[in-house]
Image (tube, rainbow, N blue to C red; front, side, top):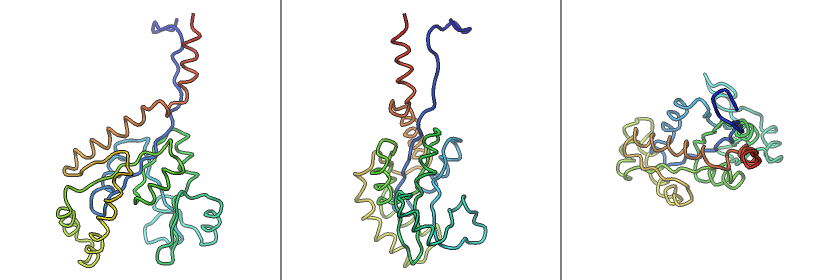
Length: 219
């Protein structure tokens, strides 16, 4: 019997982390939601992409991006070291696999601010670890209004984002959870609840096998 009066096994092991892939049309709130979720949860980190472009003023290697040469990037891609990668305007971008899976093994959760193609690629390669959440705007009209109020884009860019929004939204059925971001606080609460529920899944606690065996062996 232990000092607190319990008998039998009372141990716990390390849980397995969650790969939380967040997608949405531009302006629907996934980036703000992911940053707030990370700020509230010390065990949650943001996946850092790799790129072959040069660092911009103030950017830190390993924090904003993993900056690398084209040759190094292509070598890692050939070795299967990216969940997904693409060439954009002559620069390469990819989602590194090894640091993400190391974090999962350590019991840390990793958030991806990613489009539907990237979320699909991650889910295909790590199906047991991945949870996909799609953030919907209340309406396309409100989405366009949010984009205009941000004041970051020209009318032409906003039009392009709106043209892509419906295509992105058409993939909503591929996701495990859907959040309508009509109220930020409520959307953040739902996202937090999803994360905490997923952390409790039996499959994320491999130590339970030995724990249950020990219970069954008690006399």
